[in-house]
Length: 290
Image (tube, rainbow, N blue to C red; front, side, top):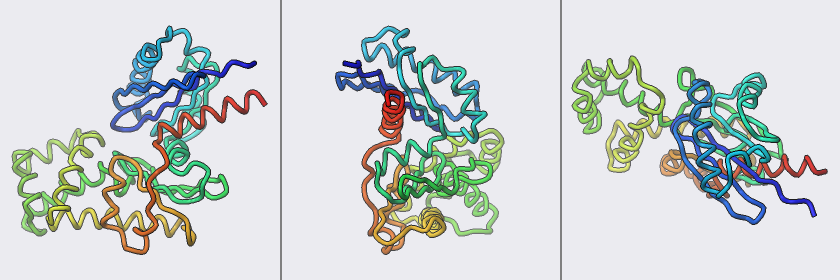
């Protein structure tokens, strides 16, 4: 009998990095660390390296056992094969594949089913799976895209707050509270000079809460984000009967802002991006023994 391999899945984004390890016995352990977007390559690799000994310890294994594992890593910021190869070169696993975080999110949310996944957290992308093939839009990073994301929402709030300060846009309880929170327009400007996507995204929960409570500016921002999701599903050709999964830390918050015809298609994701990473590791292991 061939002994089942150690499987490792890792989901790394702009806010956190989560890793899971499964043993042949079915035992599964998970650990969480800091951001692992490879746009900060050194930082991401350092956080992954610090996470792996913790993962082995949680499973009751020596660190050296990771060298026998089959792994899949889905990391935000992996834009091409060259970047994936750079990541692989710094990993200890016997067999490993590295992609961006889109395949892992879709594999976790849809399994083998057709449909669309709107993955919205610190960043965002919208992907459609049909017959096992995936096409996606967005995911181009905070500087040029990531519409609907937490970082995008946070930046939009600060823009609207400054416009309110200048008397050029409607005021609301949220914009007034935001201006006070940052100590005025100068504080917002200083924040914007160095803030990371994760720091912008930290404002998103307040926006969602304010929108739910009826704040007009927050509601308009949520509506803008929902409109992007609607446009993306149309661009991807969402077919009759196909479901829509709202995934990621912020995705489900948009359900109330989508048009009814799209909202009625929403189904809960079957699993997380971390589940998807483990599933892709299992597929790699199965290919190796065929």
